[in-house]
Image 1 (cartoon, helix red, strand yellow):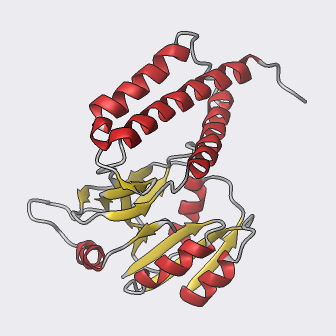
Image 2 (tube, rainbow, N blue to C red; image 1 turned 60 degrees about the horizontal axis):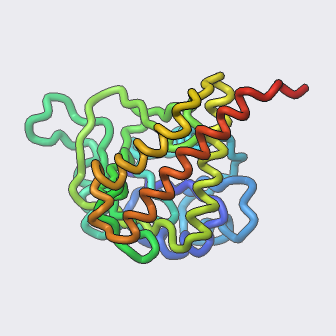
Length: 257
């Protein structure tokens, strides 16, 4: 039994396209952020088996709530802007509860590769391919780390394995969308650093963005994506600088009461 689960906020357009591709699942569950301002709830109710509306605290808490709400043994998480092919759907159903050759203990989680489409370009590197995501989970052996406000991490109580068929991620379609999301991620990460009293050193203002650019453009092969890879590597280096700068300022500011 597999529950296909989507976490959504203001995603009415994407939901209408991707939810029909989850009908192979035994249950389709959509968890909608209570702050949603579009018709996501109505669209989801017309296409999913269950819709739950709950306040958003963090991505990890939202996904843990979904694990608790699911009625199936396995949960396959899909974002609203991702697409599931028939081949991937068949592989997910086959993998859930299976014991791959060479595994003494059945896996409790499966990593799924992901093709990111950014500005209309299908990425080949820079950290956006193969971009493995831990998405197929035995919900009795998986929990998200709620100390991380963004880019959530799954903690598995058991072995893991890998699927071969990629998700298609319709990622940033415009520069404005990219900037808005990176600003949101940066703010969440800065808040976490300040809360943890982790003030970056002054030299990190230069070191962090340089390392981020090198990692994405050279180590992760961003050069293979032409101008898109160069731009994204430079942009992520800039946001590494902003994250460090804002965290230093926030850590130095006196607390407000």
